[in-house]
Amino acid sequence: MSLKLPSEKKLLRVLQGHHDATPPIWLMRQAGRYLPEYRATREQAGGFLDLCYAPSLAEEVTLQPIRRYGFDASILFADILLIPQALGQKLWFETGEGPRLTPIENADSLSLDNAAARLAPICETVDRLSKSLPKATTLIGFAGAPWTVASYMVAGRGTPDQAPARELAARDAAAFQSIIDILVAATVDYLAAQVKAGAEVLQLFESWAASLEGADFERWCVAPVAAIIRGLRARGVDAPIIAFPRAAKTHMGDYCAAVGCDALGLDTSADIDAVRREVGDEMVLQGNLDPQILAAGGAALDDAVREILAKTKNTSHIFNLGHGIVPQTPPENVTQLIELIRTAG
Ligand code: CP3
Image (cartoon, rainbow, N blue to C red; front, side, top):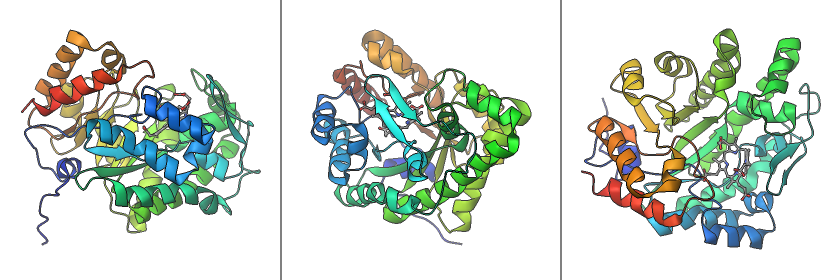
């Protein structure tokens, strides 16, 4: 039996089952438009995608929130839609609107052949960060979960209810499955490469878990994420994996057991006590603070943070939001949040 000494990194310690007096904290989208220095570097890069593919600038924006706030973890700066682009689908961002892709209905036009080469700059960003981050900061790599990524690939854009992907899955399940399968294969390769380059923890973003239920949820959300995690373990990747099935309507205990994740991300609507009862004491939970409350700040933020801290005291919990920081968030509200967390013990 090997006895592992607790990690010197606060976030990794929680993932090993140790509870400190205060939880580790990082925030989804902690590098982003709410920070003036991010907007300046994005301008320098030319655009959002140029920024993702420029390792030194992507490294810079990843480090910006670490310098300002000293978060316990840093998430690689990239996007979940870089995989479709690496597979050959056309991707661009409309300013002020969001992602656009040439819609597809099957995997015929996609290929794994050049994917690793196209994603190499992202792994270079990871490599740079693994050398430049402070020693106490954990480096998190990520990818989108296949259902969420496929929902953009089929619709060609973000949609409120993922109707085009649900329609294709119902009309031609084999064609939709072909898209999911190539995403699973590409995601295993990409995440294994991120870990090889220095990522210490991985997060899978299933932002649109809420649009599927029952057998469809099992087939398109659970099975592909389980296959990615199995694929990574089969390659010897042992980094802890955080699954984030945002607003999923299923039982979280069943979900965690089926996908084999090490930690579970909670969205804003999750009832922390109820999820804890379902997943048991060992599972690490992450998140739940409403990004709008962070944007509001003041007494509302104090109250919401204290409530989450009271519910999670002495449990395995990583402090985070229930979804990404919204661009209108005043940077000083993040300072207020960090102070509340660090003085909580
Ligand atoms: O969290 C981080 O700081 C790491 C970087 C990161 C980004 N996107 C940067 C980004 C991560 C982990 C993502 C994940 C992502 N991307 C998801 C899953 C999480 C979620 O938000 O639900 C999704 C669905 C995407 C796809 C995507 N990228 C959309 C729909 C948009 C447009 C909406 C928006 O917020 O602008 C993006 C753009 C994007 N990704 C930005 C950033 C910082 C904003 C781009 C800009 O600078 O204008």
